Length: 102
Image (cartoon, rainbow, N blue to C red; front, side, top):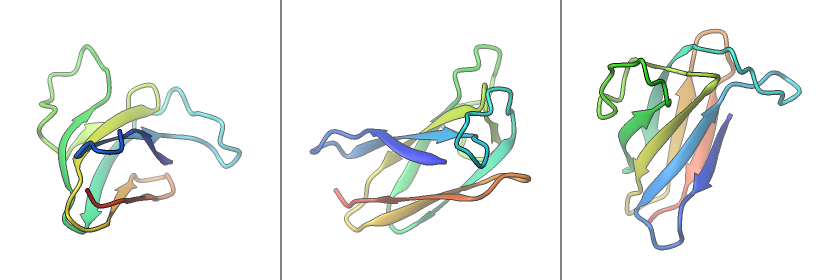
């Protein structure tokens, strides 16, 4: 599941919450799945975080991140046109979020 958790109206940066949940939308707090991100449009993922204090992965490296406690955050620079952010992970349903242009 993807949700735009905090994007001020005039902000160029969108903060997108990635959350693993079951079919009834109950959070999967133990999920640590590796996920991949795809953007359709001119938006750009500029960082990925998951709050894992033991992780040494760069937030600026977009690929190869895992969920931590079933969660992660994408920091996305909105483009001049509407875009779609898609997150996929093996064993989980793909999630999409339409991101409005800046």
